[in-house]
Length: 276
Image (cartoon, rainbow, N blue to C red):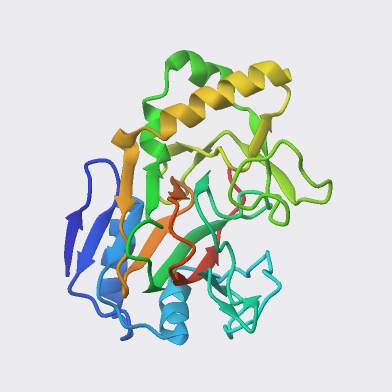
């Protein structure tokens, strides 16, 4: 097994591993250590069934369940697996989040126990676009100006996801029943002990206990800081790519792509702990 960094800030490619086969303990622990060190791991050229993907994800912890149902055709069997796709069958979508750009976010940060790990496997990808950006929020916290650190230390922020109304772009008009939860602005990673920002442009609405204009100012400064290219890896998908990322220390976003081309990826998640 080889671990090759993708950028100085975030991400590594893992070579010499076939995820369709059960992993021995030493190999899995090496992958886990690399994941904690790099935040994002890329496995190219994989040929994975849904069962293969679920088996690999289950090595990391308790599998979480899909929260937002896309209301279309269900082609997956496991409750932790969903398709991310713009393909329709008999006029109905087979997957979620079908179209266009998606702002930076952390998966399921709007519930009490957000998922800690996301596994996304590419089956069909467009000829261009639909890339995924990954940002290192640990480095972003460590390089945040001291004045902003002092203002947000110990604070919580409200995260809301209006999946039915604005699933990929920030909207100022939220449904009252959109799920929401307040988490620390900066959290501590339970495995590494390092601290990381835990707010994002898509879902974080305000900092609790701070006047709204001041909250807006602080969040805008944090969003701009943590999305700088020096913290980011841009992944250009190929069929057979499996990407694993840590939602406790990274954010991700998606670039636009042509609606005329098919895009099909399979996602599963592992449940995390309540952030502290």
